[in-house]
Image (cartoon, rainbow, N blue to C red; front, side, top):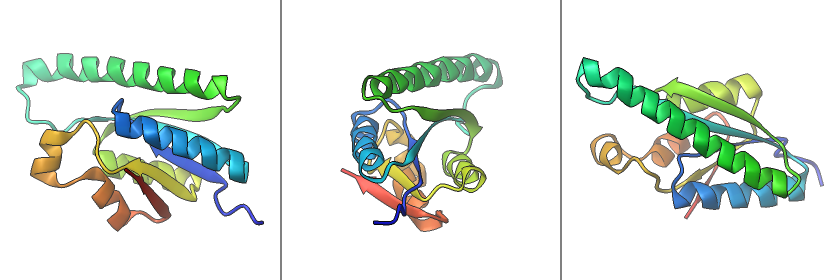
Amino acid sequence: MTNSFKKILVPIDGSIYSEKCLERACELVDAFNSNLILIYVVEKSLPINLLDRKEYLGILRKFGTRILEKANEKLSKKGITAKIFLKEGNIVNEIEKIVKKEKCDLIVVGNKGLGSVSRLLLGSVSNKISQSSSCSVMIVK
């Protein structure tokens, strides 16, 4: 069997859905001997007062770092190593930049996440990724 999923990208946000994605991605890594890439994106376009914005983004960066560290610990226990990215900007744009830069073959994303407010206003991240991605997308429920 050819390895059609050499590089798998998993966007994580700390939600139960991203944990399910990580589990599914681990199964794929085992099945296809793939490389795993994790990304957490700090959404910068939130409508927040300029003085509060810097502090809020700092909190989100710390949260993202913790989420990536926890995911990396889970992977280590399974004998899997991952390349890790903490980015800031538009979630879908940053994911697509990593897909192109790292030449990913698959994105494993949850159908829901922590961004319920932005989902109501802007549409779901998984929907946007599935519409705009240059590689295959697996949406985990």
